[in-house]
Length: 256
Image (cartoon, rainbow, N blue to C red; front, side, top):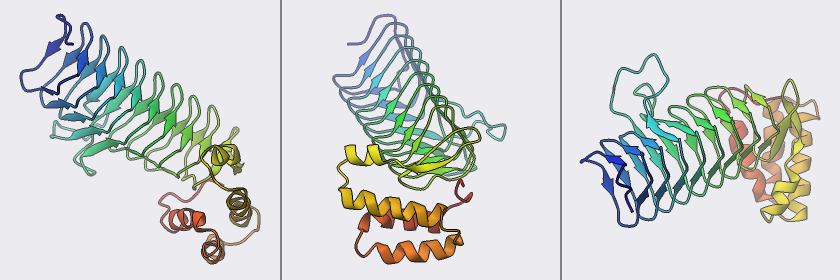
């Protein structure tokens, strides 16, 4: 399962069933769990832990030093969960000591070709990053979010669950759950109703989420007043609790 031209550091730990293609390089302090496939010409640098049944395609760079001038060789980590697909030329960097020291990617994500996950980012589960979507440092992308091709996310932004960014979006503020953004300059364009339907949200829940969107973006209310109204709506629509909590804890304010 390990090609003869692959270079594997003696300290690397590869579980049974891991395959490594031609000319790939796996460095020190790398641990790869069972069933993961590493294609040809992949470079993996540690400390990095990769879970089970991932597929890493050719020319990906995984666990490289962060692109941060404040980084001076500290021991930081990249942690990748299970069943992720990491396509050609993806670049996934370790964390920095100026944050929590780890870049974390969850389970069942699709990172298409040329996507970039910078230092100290946190990517949840079932996230799709289309070709060349890029996260600057310290970005949080929550479950089921979709970033269209060439989407760019400013450092420290938070992307809420089930949100959607159109191709070429430049995201400089937080995107609440369920919200769809696009255009130049990037701005909100309603809710991700198609995505919600595909994920099994009921028609009534989608109707209430659309109502919540209008309260936040179209009512003219101050954000704190809108949050209070949404909190009352969670009694009948618990799906809105995600939006309430997100809006209460937004760091860079929301994109408007």
